Image (cartoon, rainbow, N blue to C red; front, side, top):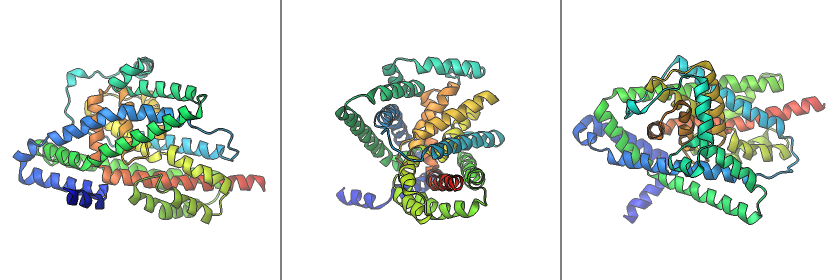
Length: 403
């Protein structure tokens, strides 16, 4: 067994997921009877995700707010606005593309348990009631709207707590994040069971459906990287933005694509910012901050997968509700954890806007892990490269105004 574990540690999680994906497809094609009964690994994996996701959101929100440092004198405000606007623009683009090219998923549904909201009024009413639900009940029932509300409230109040208390909260946040990493280490086994059993029961049309979903996701991310980000950058620097954008995609995005971690790509971005001649007192703060809150790719993932579930369930989405989803997806994206697939665990929060039960939402999360080999890599590449793009744009704009 020790030899097996050493071998697994040498193989990256991405490679393991690819192997599991291929193995599941082959088993479903050549031994469909065996694959159809292979539901336990996928069920256990989804159940583990369902159990850990509420705790993850609750603890991360509290820790991030409680340990926020005040009094840092940097020119960070315009960059912060660029981060927030860029993330919202990505979510809005994902809504438009998802409405034009709707995706559907293969889910295990009990339609009698679902009720579509009647419009923005009912959605807002449900949102308010979910926000004030008992926090313990919200955790037990995976009510992510309530979890987010109480997490923010406790985080704000704990900012006045002692250093030891805030340190304890931070340590708890790190422990929960490590727990999520442990759960995700079993993703190859869970994905193997999910792919094998799903394809055996539904045929290859399910794989084609995932291909369409992946095309929508990657298409939105390319749209942000090559259209929206250059437009935002042009508004700041008033010159051709593509040399800067393409350089950041080449020197930051490619590295992030393979590391699949915005945090791991911070040293690369800092070196690139220094190479571009940016202000050290600015990029030394904005780059780490961007790795936490500048999450255009995560906003796209949350929006596209949520609307895929909405289209699968036949829920009508009007314009105000779509706009609200863009806002919620942007907020969720800023709270996405730094682990691989962290944005997927916030999909249930967005699904809660449409009355989609947690059981169904976690199946959508599992679908996200199936396509996550490319989705998470592209998402991280977009997120990380955008950190340098917006920092450089803001620095150049400030230099131009001061000269």
